[in-house]
Image 1 (tube, rainbow, N blue to C red):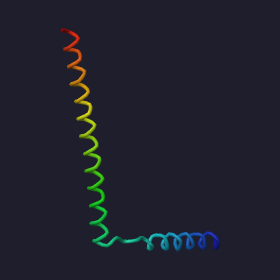
Image 2 (cartoon, rainbow, N blue to C red):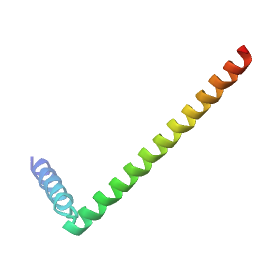
Image 3 (cartoon, rainbow, N blue to C red):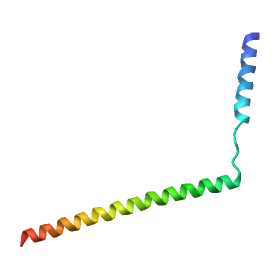
Image 4 (cartoon, one colour):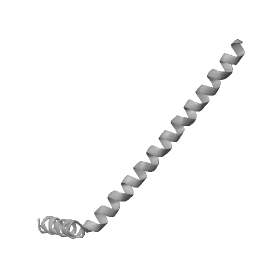
Length: 71
């Protein structure tokens, strides 16, 4: 019984140590992280737009080739 109580006390102490050691971000760090996230999202959106434009260009070229083949 004594070992059981000591085990629970040890686990509680261990959990308390890890829970209380969380690193809190300052408002400046939060803003910087948000700016980085927005930058990454904009880069991803830019890449998507560029890919879509390239796909559209390929489709237009294929349609032009088919139109020339029909004549």
